[in-house]
Image 1 (cartoon, helix red, strand yellow):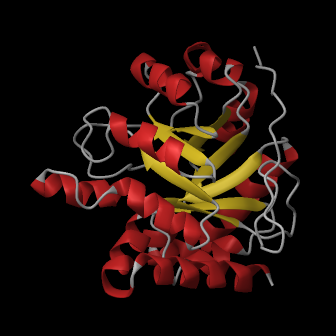
Image 2: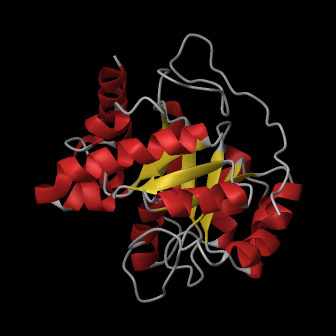
Length: 267
């Protein structure tokens, strides 16, 4: 039942700490994906076109982001269809299209042709994504519905908990990468050390199964270092915190500080 993985082009920026999009990556610089969803949240609060998520994506690229992440929700509460197309055509770095595993979203992804798609669980009543995708027990359905993504040559990622069974299930349906949910690590201070150990173990398993390991959700300046130091970690996707900090210090400065923390953690 496993889908065949297709080779993807490498992406390198000479003279920077960016690296191949799908290389081995052990001990190398860590990619930073910047999620610009909440620029659209502010725009939609008043209607109109300001602030523009496309402008935010371009500023993030200029500031050193390795990729842009945007979540097109079924209720279009922030990013909207025209945003995805405009972002895709306006940036020269990878676009990571977060979405639910629905036929509508699969069709939109194939039409948009982002560099990667990250499948996340989605409930209309949630404020933000509350946990990882349930892959175990749903392998056949996910394999079938996600086949067009793989056939189009788009990298497939699944947003999962740092759980052995879920990670192995993601590998079984042909995921190129998994993004580990870091919410428990960020928000449960009393259990933070245990959660960090769980993330590190999960990252090692992801790497051993031939997938890239990504992580995200709730990371900030205080919590990012320990996760970034996990040697198998290839990419961190951070949005709400960076957009919030940009109100006070500007988006380029907020991204620059985060990149400095990633470099320090890897050093």
